[in-house]
Image (cartoon, rainbow, N blue to C red; front, side):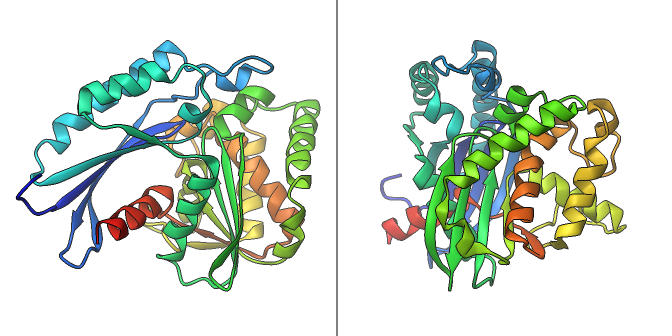
Length: 316
Protein backbone atom coordinates (compact mmCIF):
# COMPACT_ATOMS: atom_id res chain seq x y z
CA UNK A 1 0.00 0.00 0.00
CA UNK A 2 2.95 2.38 0.53
CA UNK A 3 3.26 4.92 -2.22
CA UNK A 4 -0.13 4.02 -3.68
CA UNK A 5 -3.53 5.61 -3.33
CA UNK A 6 -6.25 3.71 -1.52
CA UNK A 7 -8.80 2.93 -4.22
CA UNK A 8 -10.76 0.05 -2.71
CA UNK A 9 -11.79 -0.86 0.81
CA UNK A 10 -12.45 -4.58 1.18
CA UNK A 11 -14.55 -5.71 4.13
CA UNK A 12 -14.79 -9.32 5.25
CA UNK A 13 -17.83 -9.54 7.49
CA UNK A 14 -18.26 -12.70 9.57
CA UNK A 15 -21.82 -12.81 10.80
CA UNK A 16 -23.56 -15.60 12.66
CA UNK A 17 -25.51 -16.73 9.58
CA UNK A 18 -23.52 -15.40 6.63
CA UNK A 19 -20.01 -14.41 5.65
CA UNK A 20 -19.88 -11.46 3.29
CA UNK A 21 -17.35 -9.82 1.06
CA UNK A 22 -18.00 -6.15 0.30
CA UNK A 23 -15.66 -4.21 -2.01
CA UNK A 24 -16.08 -0.45 -1.92
CA UNK A 25 -14.61 2.12 -4.31
CA UNK A 26 -13.19 5.07 -2.38
CA UNK A 27 -13.45 8.56 -3.86
CA UNK A 28 -10.89 11.32 -3.29
CA UNK A 29 -13.36 12.97 -0.91
CA UNK A 30 -13.44 9.89 1.29
CA UNK A 31 -16.89 8.71 0.17
CA UNK A 32 -17.45 5.06 -0.65
CA UNK A 33 -19.60 3.19 -3.15
CA UNK A 34 -20.11 -0.56 -3.01
CA UNK A 35 -19.04 -2.13 -6.29
CA UNK A 36 -19.06 -5.81 -5.37
CA UNK A 37 -20.88 -7.87 -2.76
CA UNK A 38 -20.82 -11.62 -2.24
CA UNK A 39 -22.65 -13.54 0.45
CA UNK A 40 -22.03 -17.10 1.51
CA UNK A 41 -24.40 -18.79 3.98
CA UNK A 42 -21.98 -20.32 6.48
CA UNK A 43 -24.11 -20.65 9.65
CA UNK A 44 -21.13 -19.95 11.90
CA UNK A 45 -23.48 -19.89 14.91
CA UNK A 46 -24.99 -23.29 14.11
CA UNK A 47 -25.41 -25.36 17.27
CA UNK A 48 -24.62 -22.48 19.63
CA UNK A 49 -28.29 -21.93 20.51
CA UNK A 50 -28.49 -25.46 21.90
CA UNK A 51 -25.58 -24.97 24.28
CA UNK A 52 -27.65 -23.68 27.20
CA UNK A 53 -25.79 -23.63 30.49
CA UNK A 54 -22.51 -24.60 28.82
CA UNK A 55 -19.70 -22.68 27.20
CA UNK A 56 -20.64 -21.57 23.70
CA UNK A 57 -18.42 -23.17 21.09
CA UNK A 58 -18.00 -22.84 17.33
CA UNK A 59 -18.75 -26.16 15.65
CA UNK A 60 -15.88 -27.52 13.47
CA UNK A 61 -18.11 -27.85 10.39
CA UNK A 62 -19.31 -24.26 10.77
CA UNK A 63 -15.70 -23.04 10.97
CA UNK A 64 -14.78 -25.11 7.92
CA UNK A 65 -17.65 -23.64 5.89
CA UNK A 66 -16.60 -20.12 6.84
CA UNK A 67 -12.93 -20.65 6.04
CA UNK A 68 -13.92 -22.07 2.64
CA UNK A 69 -15.82 -18.82 2.05
CA UNK A 70 -12.65 -16.87 2.96
CA UNK A 71 -10.67 -18.79 0.31
CA UNK A 72 -13.28 -17.83 -2.27
CA UNK A 73 -13.33 -14.19 -1.15
CA UNK A 74 -9.54 -13.93 -1.43
CA UNK A 75 -9.66 -15.09 -5.06
CA UNK A 76 -12.19 -12.35 -5.78
CA UNK A 77 -10.64 -9.36 -4.01
CA UNK A 78 -7.12 -10.08 -5.23
CA UNK A 79 -8.29 -8.76 -8.59
CA UNK A 80 -8.88 -5.28 -7.15
CA UNK A 81 -5.73 -3.12 -6.97
CA UNK A 82 -4.72 -0.65 -4.25
CA UNK A 83 -7.02 -2.28 -1.72
CA UNK A 84 -7.10 -2.14 2.05
CA UNK A 85 -8.59 -5.29 3.59
CA UNK A 86 -10.44 -5.16 6.92
CA UNK A 87 -12.31 -7.94 8.69
CA UNK A 88 -15.04 -7.73 11.31
CA UNK A 89 -16.91 -10.40 13.25
CA UNK A 90 -20.05 -10.27 15.35
CA UNK A 91 -21.99 -12.43 17.83
CA UNK A 92 -20.90 -15.98 16.98
CA UNK A 93 -17.17 -15.17 17.20
CA UNK A 94 -17.74 -12.75 20.08
CA UNK A 95 -19.44 -15.35 22.26
CA UNK A 96 -17.54 -18.51 21.36
CA UNK A 97 -14.95 -19.75 23.84
CA UNK A 98 -12.95 -21.42 21.06
CA UNK A 99 -12.79 -18.64 18.46
CA UNK A 100 -8.95 -18.43 18.58
CA UNK A 101 -8.44 -21.12 15.92
CA UNK A 102 -10.87 -19.40 13.56
CA UNK A 103 -9.25 -15.97 14.09
CA UNK A 104 -5.73 -17.37 13.63
CA UNK A 105 -6.80 -19.16 10.44
CA UNK A 106 -8.27 -15.99 8.93
CA UNK A 107 -5.11 -14.05 9.85
CA UNK A 108 -2.92 -16.72 8.23
CA UNK A 109 -5.02 -16.70 5.06
CA UNK A 110 -5.51 -12.96 4.66
CA UNK A 111 -2.81 -11.29 6.75
CA UNK A 112 -5.57 -9.37 8.51
CA UNK A 113 -6.53 -9.28 12.18
CA UNK A 114 -10.28 -9.71 12.61
CA UNK A 115 -11.88 -6.92 14.64
CA UNK A 116 -14.43 -8.51 16.95
CA UNK A 117 -17.24 -6.03 17.45
CA UNK A 118 -18.71 -5.83 20.92
CA UNK A 119 -22.49 -5.65 21.17
CA UNK A 120 -22.18 -1.91 21.81
CA UNK A 121 -19.87 -1.50 18.80
CA UNK A 122 -22.30 -3.34 16.58
CA UNK A 123 -25.24 -1.25 17.77
CA UNK A 124 -23.30 2.00 17.27
CA UNK A 125 -22.19 1.02 13.76
CA UNK A 126 -25.80 0.05 12.94
CA UNK A 127 -26.84 3.53 14.05
CA UNK A 128 -24.19 5.18 11.86
CA UNK A 129 -25.13 3.01 8.88
CA UNK A 130 -28.81 3.93 9.15
CA UNK A 131 -28.53 7.60 10.10
CA UNK A 132 -26.13 8.30 7.21
CA UNK A 133 -28.46 6.72 4.66
CA UNK A 134 -32.09 7.32 5.72
CA UNK A 135 -33.71 10.73 6.45
CA UNK A 136 -35.49 9.67 9.65
CA UNK A 137 -35.50 11.96 12.68
CA UNK A 138 -36.92 9.63 15.37
CA UNK A 139 -36.92 5.84 15.10
CA UNK A 140 -35.93 2.61 16.76
CA UNK A 141 -33.36 0.55 14.85
CA UNK A 142 -33.47 -3.24 15.22
CA UNK A 143 -30.76 -5.43 13.73
CA UNK A 144 -31.86 -9.06 14.00
CA UNK A 145 -28.77 -11.10 13.30
CA UNK A 146 -28.18 -14.81 13.60
CA UNK A 147 -26.68 -14.68 17.08
CA UNK A 148 -27.66 -11.31 18.56
CA UNK A 149 -30.16 -8.49 18.25
CA UNK A 150 -29.12 -4.85 18.45
CA UNK A 151 -31.72 -2.24 19.41
CA UNK A 152 -31.05 1.50 19.17
CA UNK A 153 -33.36 4.36 20.09
CA UNK A 154 -32.81 7.44 17.92
CA UNK A 155 -34.28 10.81 18.87
CA UNK A 156 -33.62 13.90 16.75
CA UNK A 157 -31.09 11.76 14.77
CA UNK A 158 -29.01 11.13 17.92
CA UNK A 159 -28.54 7.68 19.46
CA UNK A 160 -30.17 7.78 22.92
CA UNK A 161 -29.82 4.11 23.87
CA UNK A 162 -27.69 1.33 22.39
CA UNK A 163 -28.45 -2.25 23.45
CA UNK A 164 -27.38 -5.72 22.39
CA UNK A 165 -29.52 -8.74 23.29
CA UNK A 166 -27.35 -11.89 22.97
CA UNK A 167 -29.96 -13.90 21.08
CA UNK A 168 -30.65 -13.94 17.35
CA UNK A 169 -32.55 -15.78 14.63
CA UNK A 170 -30.38 -18.90 14.69
CA UNK A 171 -30.01 -19.25 18.45
CA UNK A 172 -33.71 -18.54 19.07
CA UNK A 173 -34.76 -20.99 16.36
CA UNK A 174 -32.63 -23.72 17.92
CA UNK A 175 -33.80 -22.92 21.43
CA UNK A 176 -37.54 -22.92 20.68
CA UNK A 177 -37.85 -25.29 17.71
CA UNK A 178 -38.96 -22.51 15.37
CA UNK A 179 -37.63 -24.30 12.27
CA UNK A 180 -40.78 -26.48 12.47
CA UNK A 181 -44.41 -25.52 12.94
CA UNK A 182 -44.31 -24.48 16.58
CA UNK A 183 -46.79 -25.90 19.05
CA UNK A 184 -48.80 -23.45 21.16
CA UNK A 185 -46.58 -24.39 24.11
CA UNK A 186 -43.36 -23.68 22.18
CA UNK A 187 -44.66 -20.35 20.89
CA UNK A 188 -45.79 -19.34 24.37
CA UNK A 189 -42.35 -20.16 25.82
CA UNK A 190 -40.71 -18.23 22.98
CA UNK A 191 -42.90 -15.16 23.50
CA UNK A 192 -42.44 -15.26 27.28
CA UNK A 193 -38.67 -15.39 26.85
CA UNK A 194 -38.66 -12.44 24.44
CA UNK A 195 -40.94 -10.47 26.77
CA UNK A 196 -38.43 -10.98 29.58
CA UNK A 197 -35.63 -9.58 27.40
CA UNK A 198 -37.66 -6.48 26.54
CA UNK A 199 -38.64 -5.89 30.17
CA UNK A 200 -34.94 -5.33 30.91
CA UNK A 201 -35.00 -2.32 28.56
CA UNK A 202 -36.74 0.26 30.73
CA UNK A 203 -36.29 2.94 28.08
CA UNK A 204 -38.52 1.19 25.53
CA UNK A 205 -41.50 3.26 26.72
CA UNK A 206 -39.68 6.31 25.28
CA UNK A 207 -40.06 4.72 21.83
CA UNK A 208 -43.84 4.40 21.82
CA UNK A 209 -45.25 4.99 18.34
CA UNK A 210 -41.94 5.68 16.55
CA UNK A 211 -41.22 3.86 13.28
CA UNK A 212 -38.98 0.81 13.39
CA UNK A 213 -36.02 0.47 11.03
CA UNK A 214 -35.17 -3.17 10.41
CA UNK A 215 -31.79 -4.68 9.54
CA UNK A 216 -30.68 -8.27 9.14
CA UNK A 217 -31.28 -11.08 6.68
CA UNK A 218 -34.59 -12.32 8.06
CA UNK A 219 -35.99 -8.80 7.88
CA UNK A 220 -34.71 -8.32 4.34
CA UNK A 221 -36.53 -11.52 3.42
CA UNK A 222 -39.78 -10.11 4.84
CA UNK A 223 -39.30 -7.03 2.63
CA UNK A 224 -38.86 -9.23 -0.46
CA UNK A 225 -41.94 -11.29 0.41
CA UNK A 226 -44.01 -8.12 0.80
CA UNK A 227 -42.71 -6.73 -2.49
CA UNK A 228 -43.81 -9.96 -4.15
CA UNK A 229 -47.25 -9.60 -2.53
CA UNK A 230 -47.46 -6.11 -4.02
CA UNK A 231 -46.27 -7.44 -7.42
CA UNK A 232 -43.24 -5.15 -7.31
CA UNK A 233 -39.99 -5.88 -9.10
CA UNK A 234 -36.44 -5.13 -7.95
CA UNK A 235 -36.63 -7.50 -4.98
CA UNK A 236 -33.06 -6.72 -3.98
CA UNK A 237 -33.72 -2.97 -3.77
CA UNK A 238 -35.25 -2.73 -0.32
CA UNK A 239 -33.35 0.20 1.19
CA UNK A 240 -35.93 2.67 2.46
CA UNK A 241 -38.82 0.34 1.59
CA UNK A 242 -41.76 1.07 3.91
CA UNK A 243 -44.60 -1.18 5.04
CA UNK A 244 -47.25 -1.01 7.77
CA UNK A 245 -47.29 -2.95 11.03
CA UNK A 246 -50.23 -4.94 9.63
CA UNK A 247 -48.24 -5.88 6.52
CA UNK A 248 -45.45 -7.27 8.69
CA UNK A 249 -47.75 -9.19 11.01
CA UNK A 250 -49.72 -10.57 8.03
CA UNK A 251 -46.52 -12.07 6.60
CA UNK A 252 -45.71 -13.48 10.04
CA UNK A 253 -49.18 -15.01 10.49
CA UNK A 254 -48.93 -16.65 7.07
CA UNK A 255 -45.51 -18.17 7.77
CA UNK A 256 -46.46 -19.25 11.30
CA UNK A 257 -48.75 -21.98 9.98
CA UNK A 258 -46.25 -23.35 7.45
CA UNK A 259 -43.49 -25.91 7.87
CA UNK A 260 -39.99 -25.28 6.59
CA UNK A 261 -40.68 -26.76 3.15
CA UNK A 262 -43.89 -24.80 2.71
CA UNK A 263 -42.07 -21.60 3.70
CA UNK A 264 -39.49 -22.24 0.98
CA UNK A 265 -42.29 -22.09 -1.58
CA UNK A 266 -43.39 -18.60 -0.48
CA UNK A 267 -42.69 -15.99 -3.17
CA UNK A 268 -39.71 -13.85 -2.16
CA UNK A 269 -38.41 -16.30 0.46
CA UNK A 270 -34.64 -16.67 0.62
CA UNK A 271 -34.30 -20.44 0.62
CA UNK A 272 -31.60 -20.70 3.27
CA UNK A 273 -33.59 -18.56 5.71
CA UNK A 274 -36.84 -20.54 5.58
CA UNK A 275 -35.86 -22.49 8.70
CA UNK A 276 -34.83 -19.49 10.84
CA UNK A 277 -37.20 -16.76 9.67
CA UNK A 278 -39.76 -17.23 12.47
CA UNK A 279 -36.92 -17.17 14.98
CA UNK A 280 -36.04 -13.74 13.59
CA UNK A 281 -39.56 -12.38 13.09
CA UNK A 282 -41.19 -13.30 16.41
CA UNK A 283 -39.24 -10.72 18.49
CA UNK A 284 -39.98 -8.04 15.87
CA UNK A 285 -43.72 -8.76 15.90
CA UNK A 286 -43.71 -8.52 19.68
CA UNK A 287 -41.82 -5.22 19.59
CA UNK A 288 -44.27 -3.79 17.05
CA UNK A 289 -47.10 -4.71 19.40
CA UNK A 290 -45.38 -3.25 22.47
CA UNK A 291 -44.49 0.05 20.76
CA UNK A 292 -47.63 0.26 18.59
CA UNK A 293 -45.41 1.45 15.74
CA UNK A 294 -47.43 2.20 12.62
CA UNK A 295 -44.66 1.81 10.07
CA UNK A 296 -41.63 -0.32 9.38
CA UNK A 297 -38.69 0.74 7.20
CA UNK A 298 -36.00 -1.57 5.88
CA UNK A 299 -32.34 -0.62 5.66
CA UNK A 300 -29.58 -2.22 3.63
CA UNK A 301 -27.07 -0.03 5.43
CA UNK A 302 -25.99 -1.31 8.83
CA UNK A 303 -22.95 -2.21 10.92
CA UNK A 304 -20.64 -2.85 7.97
CA UNK A 305 -21.40 0.56 6.46
CA UNK A 306 -21.16 2.21 9.88
CA UNK A 307 -17.75 0.62 10.34
CA UNK A 308 -16.65 1.98 6.95
CA UNK A 309 -17.82 5.50 7.85
CA UNK A 310 -15.71 5.32 11.01
CA UNK A 311 -12.69 3.78 9.27
CA UNK A 312 -12.63 6.39 6.50
CA UNK A 313 -13.09 9.28 8.95
CA UNK A 314 -10.08 8.01 10.88
CA UNK A 315 -8.01 7.99 7.66
CA UNK A 316 -8.75 11.65 6.93
